[in-house]
Amino acid sequence: EAAAAEYEALETLRAVLALPALPRRIECFDISTIQGRETVASVVVCEDGRMRRGEYRKYRIRGLGLGTGGLGKTRALSLEAGGLGKRRTLESRAGALPAPSPQPPAPVHDDYAAMHEVVGRRYRKLLEEGGPFPDLVVIDGGKGQLSAAYAALEELGLANLVAVGLAKK
Image 1 (tube, rainbow, N blue to C red):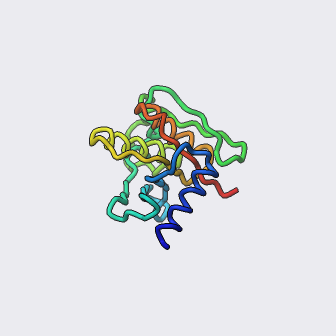
Image 2: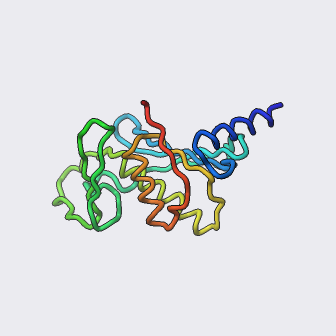
Image 3: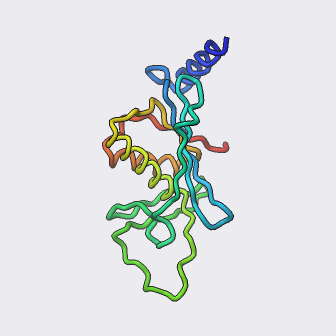
């Protein structure tokens, strides 16, 4: 009975997203900020309709806080922020760093750069290990977070992976 319900849920998901096959392995990404100071990410994994707690991962976001945006590219990427019509530019690591100051810089909380970083780190490691790769990548966020995640996948040669974003609307 439980197996039938799990299959039915995966089949519904396949149909709604017009996927060519059942999404047997799904990986979901979320970015959080702890007490306004530290940005972290989490990845949860679902396989054949069952959560795989042993495969969950947490990441500390490394590339933020230096004014670099954490993209690691030599160009800037401009993305819309949450559909509010505001634009935010994610600067490259190749950009000039600010002059050293006596106090450490305040952390920069940029969900787009954080999503780009964690997706890149996750799938770079899976490439090194030979998988397993998901049939579906779910990004907690709208167009901006999804675009940042997809850019990371493209940079790794994994543009063939299917990624969807979950937005509040």
